[in-house]
Image 1 (tube, rainbow, N blue to C red):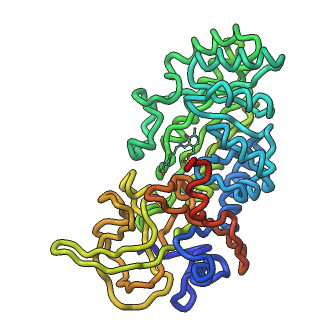
Image 2: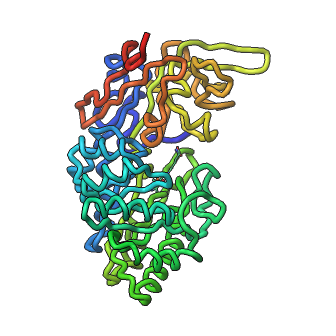
Image 3: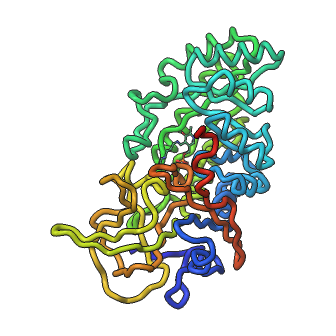
Amino acid sequence: MLEPSGVFHYRDGALFCEETAVADIAARAGTPCYVYSRRAILERFRDYDEGLGDLPHRICYSVKANSNVHVLSLLARAGAGFDIVSGGELFRVLKAGGDPSGVVFSGVGKTAEEVEYALDAGIFAFNCESEAELALVDDLAARRGVKACVSLRVNPNVDAGAHPYISTGLREHKFGIDITEVEGVYERAQAFRHLATEGVGCHIGSQILEPTPLLEAADRMLELAHRLRKKGIPIRHLDLGGGLGVRYRPEDRAPDIRQFAAEIRRRMEGQGLLVLLEPGRSIVGEAGVLLTRVLYRKRTQSREFVVVDAAMNDLLRPSLYRSHHEILPVRRAARGRIRADVVGPVCESGDFLALDRELDDVLPGDLLAVWTAGAYGFVLASNYNSRPRPPEILVDGSQWRIIRARETYPDLVRGECP
Ligand code: LLP
């Protein structure tokens, strides 16, 4: 079993987030609900920021991991920049009071409208993934009479060893420009008069528990920056993407963020480069749980089921990636252990939070906490089966507040025409 540590811990058998009893939150806010620790989010951000020390750097939190406006504004106030992949994410960052000049825009399919929005907002840089995209950004920048700062996303052909859906740095992936071809692209890009091609970037994958491939990619990026500078292309910033993993299973060893940051700093010191990182999961992942209540116990001839009130529409990761999330009781009852599938109410066989899982015995009405749900949790939630999306709650010491209300039935039909 994953022994809770840090901000989530047991006191006399009851689960606490910081100084708040999680059961109190469920009693007042209802279930299912997401609960995040403010302290955990800010600590992870500072681990990166302080770990890089006086190296010129910017931590561009990857908005896709958890895009709640309140979370973004916490990070903005702590000094974060942002990595966005859509106009919607830029809107959120601006709404949260984030500084557009600290924003990088990633993604393989930016639309003209999104590029225009980002140019008008005055973001720091576009992470471009193709020559066609460079041409579009150049054209739209020219119409505005501005010069857009651009970084090319390089595919360094490093195997991050992650799940195939979240591994991105190999030749066969759709992302980036192959490292063997990218120098030619930089040379041709010099012809675009409204682009300042000053950055080099990569992102090799996600949930990377062994930092060696990330450091290898960083070395390749630095070598590339040197080669480009020799050709007279003035590279000023290096964007190393995100990817550090978190603990989902008891046996996972999550990399130490400060140590990783120190390794990056050692490699990049004195190079005259601004270093950007785009962490998402490692900042918010372990800072959140999904609370759910047991509705029924059910036994068929072949299996034991625990039916809970959270489903794949609330937390998609187990269904989509078969990913493992620990499930712990909110109150330890010492009733022994069972082996069961933990499933939700959605009408799909693929609707489960855990399969064939050993967990503490539970009764209807019991509360469970689904662990490591702060990243790629709520953001992947949907209204499938017309289920209102759950609320998001932020704990700060012994206080907590709802930072996104539970959706209502009228919310479900907003914008539809009867
Ligand atoms: N930068 C870029 C360009 C990215 O594509 C991503 C994640 C990140 C940064 C942040 O990576 P992180 O630090 O969070 O690993 N839904 C999947 C994860 C998809 C990740 C997509 N890109 C999951 O639930 O595991």
